[in-house]
Image (cartoon, rainbow, N blue to C red):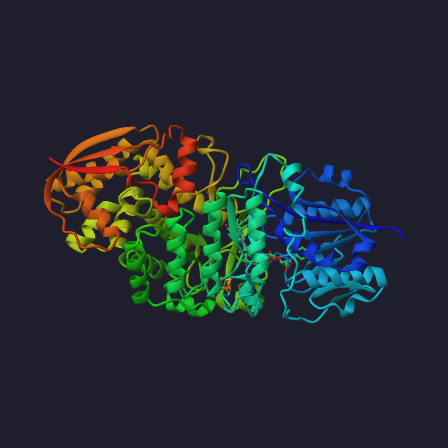
Length: 640
Ligand code: B12
Ligand code: SF4
């Protein structure tokens, strides 16, 4: 009997020297190989996690029988090119495509004759059944959730929802052990699941269309995976759950992670998507993570504040009142939070989006609002024709929209994202304007460049945050020769080029490292490079408000110096108001009054960040969720 060779392909981009362990490919293989028949008929040759040269990969392969491609938006083009080449060299090999970027039905089979079988949704059971069918020659027709060709026709087998989650762990089965010796140059990141499925059905999300019940992995498996990862000194643990914190045992899971960090030093950081109802439990989880410096910020999710858009995407949010209470609670406990919004949902307009951002800031979200442009995903409800027609969804294809990814190199196969740039309620022009405002708010408020003026004017003169930022946007538009005017004029051009189909949503500059920056972060970096000129120029804008001269001068001094900049060691200055105490207390939802009080502010920066690349990475990329763009803990205030 000849052994049949299996290759699994789950390639991804690198994030510097960090790489995700190819967990999806691993879990499918681990499940298949618990079957003794499969074990005796097949041999796993390789799990590929990098975008290796196509020619080299095919050349080095040893007579592949089955090649499984784990397909996502970030590797779809690469996978197709590799699969095509494999099929040319090995016409009899079986090419399987599974993963989130495989649309329902036989569409990919029609388009690409080098693909033999599509697996829709979860892969463990069908993959194993397909391998078995090649051993006992049983028909594929009996295997649910797949598409294939038969006698010149396309067969789509019926949908089945899986009920168990009793799958072995690829980590504990040893499928990744050799990675640490074979690829010592990488630091790997762990992706783990505690449960699978999501009870919600958001129209823009893949999982929404599956509407699966939540199934739990055994606790023992999860805890043993953690030990495995700590043994391999994995610094970053990511949890793939759709709603972490939804179950009581999730707090126990965090307790164990904290204990492991204390005893082994690992993991250093933990990240997940939190449950949407943001309960007491999630607060406790956030607190524990924060106290142990493992937090990457707790999401206080919203996506949209427009009731029309919420309805159209099937999303229910917490009320603004409850959100405000939550914000106060997190702020008082000093736990960083961030709120995500999606721009481009059907029903959203410029006004509803602007008002939504205003509401969030008023509710206390001064740390972070991340605005994502809505990505059109083929397996989501939004991906289907009826939905597209009903809401007049228009999309634009752009280079893969993945911030902080290494810049694509010359010979690489480009990947693409499809961004929603038009709906029945938002035309292209409005999409550009809404984005301009969103970048303005993120850059100047949440990345703090003018945040203290916005808060001051809101507190003292009841000027709405969004009015302040709309006026700033118009100032920048009318002053294209200033530092900020120039950056925002460039952003506008880039947004236009997205609509034309010639541009993307990332900026590159070697000065900030070999990675792509989202516009708001790029704008922040460009402005900080010329920070003194920026504050001199923006004075004209600030003068247009009715701020007493003495306060304006002092506040500008405070605002200008509180922004972290590279190469700074120490700065000391005197101001006449208690600005530092006032604003820091304001972030914690406190009620200290702004009073005249002469004080000396001393900032001692011991972080030793002198290079722009280091600054961009540590302060802007890693630090943004925790408001690291400003000096906080290293500031001392003395009475004068
Ligand atoms: C963890 C995660 C990340 C991580 C790491 C991703 C990674 N490279 O490993 C981070 C935070 C970096 C990330 C980023 C992004 N992500 Co993400 N992410 C996830 C998340 C939460 C979990 C993925 C996971 O590992 N799940 C566990 C595994 C076991 O499940 P699975 O991937 O579904 O695999 C099963 C099946 O798909 C199938 N299968 C998979 N491969 C194969 C192969 C074969 C042969 C077979 C038979 C079956 C099969 O079987 C598997 C087991 O049942 C999912 C949402 C989700 N909960 O699934 C989104 C998700 C995968 N991400 C998504 C997106 C869009 C992105 C971004 C592009 C977002 C952005 N614009 O920034 C970036 C790009 C990432 C990149 N370049 O790597 C989309 C992908 C949609 C698509 N069509 O590809 C998802 C589905 C989110 C969504 N709600 O729609 N992401
Ligand atoms: S966006 Fe989150 S809550 Fe909504 S369906 Fe997807 S995984 Fe579930």
